[in-house]
Length: 442
Image 1 (cartoon, one colour):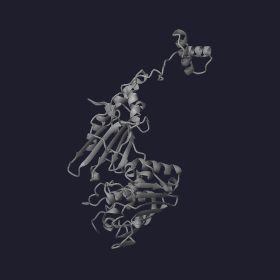
Image 2 (cartoon, helix red, strand yellow):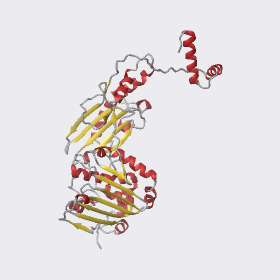
Image 3 (cartoon, rainbow, N blue to C red):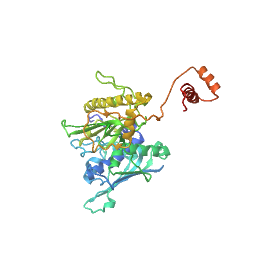
Image 4 (spheres, one colour):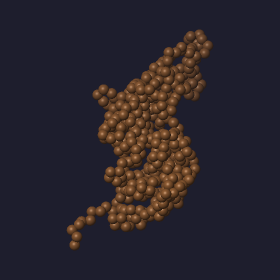
């Protein structure tokens, strides 16, 4: 009898472990990431005009297809279908993918019958996968078998790309994927997370609906200038490029906060938590918890590196790795960039009861010159600048008067004036005083 003790993992364990903590939206996002990576391999960081990713959803099937160059046969044979990245094989420069599990995890999450078909300019690949049959085979065979594996071809440009069709959907997925809410959430998620790629020309469609990216905007003028900090950290591998931008935008509490983009993919949006410094109490710089008063705050961090293992994101690319040393250092810069914007917004709030409102006027002027956050044209500025406009006060400009009195007294005055609201009480009593005490007509 052999003395070897069986320690092989089961395929069921891998499937359950990989899919347990990932949402369907994120699984689809992994497949879009693969297409985005292919677009990068095809065109680098240039514009992606003419490239597309198309997603189709139904109760019977899920398909995603792109025209982003296809899967090379050697990549398919040695890398793409492996569960994890092989030892000694580096990710292609600039890729979003890091661990080599996204595509397979999405397959396991969504359904049980998959066909991957891909054309490059010189090859054709087709790989059918039946998850149930593959799972039942408890041998050492973890491979998939291609039914088409052709090379030395001349394929026309319109045929080049990859198509993944998943049928025999898992029951819970089949029910979820056809709901209007899922499609709307998917569109919204892709619109935010891949905003930078779509701004650069990559077209993404869900059920034939093209997703239109709405650029993030910051207010900028001679009086309001955002922070823009740029550095490159070498380390032991490829340089990690870091850009930090912080300033003010339109007043919107849902849009306020920090945005973190990693190699073209936004992994945090409008974050207002301790992860990005909100509520931080430090020795030199403290940041309050998020408040509606700071609804204009916008902060952006862009990480880019040819080696995705240096990017401070988690394995699902849905959050930041708080223990990453590069992120710890960047977070200190973020806190330093937040403080002057918070001070500016506090001062804007404080002047609301003043006759002169120079900071508010500066914001109004900057509204006409808001810029998209694309970083071109910004100059290094380590601290946000917000300076009020010198203004000639308009004597006819409306201002707010506010005071509080006991309810009984206010009701007595309402009854005497014959009005129904407290606002009318304020207007009538002011008009009375202005006319009969000052002798002026309002």
